[in-house]
Image (tube, rainbow, N blue to C red; front, side, top):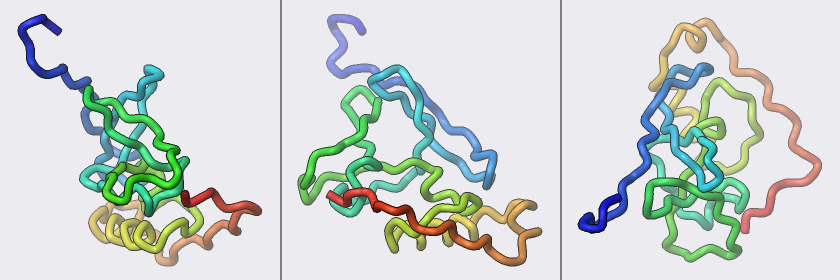
Length: 133
């Protein structure tokens, strides 16, 4: 970044397709020089997402897990696509996420999903639930 530039450059991540459902997901860098696949165009209020699943966007375009409890009531965050993927078996973490997964299943329409007549049985809930902040 040059001295005359007023704003930081954003790290380019891009979009890719999920191998499980075929829907787009955002590839975003983390401060640890790793990549995380996030659900595009979804920014729920941070207090509605358990601390270990809140990804906060930094000014340079990277994201980091936001574990502050309780979060600012107006703070927005992002979640990993794997939590909203309709073709992955996950426990019902939050009612709004179940709705998002249903919507993704409706939008997806790929061959794998149309062949499946009945949704898979949900996995049993974990012994200990994550803290919701």
